[in-house]
Length: 142
Image 1 (cartoon, helix red, strand yellow):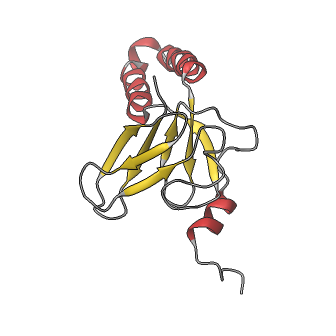
Image 2 (cartoon, helix red, strand yellow; image 1 turned 135 degrees about the horizontal axis):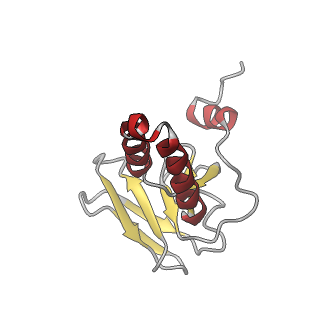
């Protein structure tokens, strides 16, 4: 499968995900005529965000949070009958799902999601301090 970018269009506020070519190209919002962005090749895609021109990215697991919640809720429902062993089973299932789930990259500022791109080692896990610096105006510490 080709890499894809998930975006909340800043013009119409609609969410969409489009596949992009690894060599770069254009990304267009299917909901409005104003959303057009140039996407770099996969080798330098994480120099700057294609949507908001931000330089800050973080990596995270591309895991469906509702699926994880469903596993825990079902295990919790069976706690009285299994004397708590269902929570151990939920832990094992969650661990297996976690190990098999691929990673994706997100932009700190616009929260665009970059899936199935090669992720450079310099992109780290989410950092609250970095997120605060990218989301607030530049004069935070003045």
